[in-house]
Each structure stands twice: as C-alpha cells, then as structure tokens.
Length: 77
Picture (cartoon, rainbow, N blue to C red):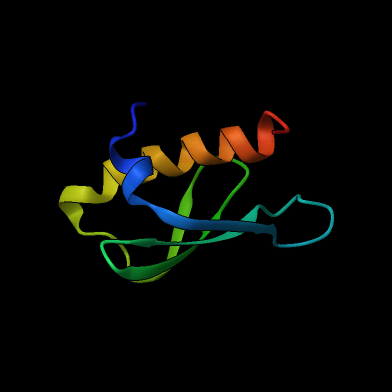
C-alpha cells in the first residue's frame, strides 16, 4: 500500500487485549479528525467500538489497519 490512507491515519496505537495476545489487540487512531477505536482480532476481523468509518471507506481503512498491524506486530518492527 502506498502512502495514501496510512498517511491519513495518525496516532495509531495498539495494545494486547490480554497479556497472552490470544484475544487480539485494542487499536485506536485518528482519521479525518475523528478518534476511532476498535478491536483487531487474531483472525484479522476488526470490531469497531467508536466512530466506525463510513461504508465507502470501510474497506480502505480495514486494509490500512491490516498493513499497520503487519508492520508493528507480525513483522516485529
């Protein structure tokens, strides 16, 4: 993915839901000036808690979250 959406997502934060990381991660970030909160599950599902992106943006934002999680968690960077 290019800089497009990931450049628009700012202040991306994540932490394990549980110390074992079996249940996924809580994530939060800002997109278009709104704070968005969700749970990123181990199977890649995103469960939205606050300010779910619009239907038109949902796929794009979800792909950006997958990229960020791959970079931060799964690649060990």
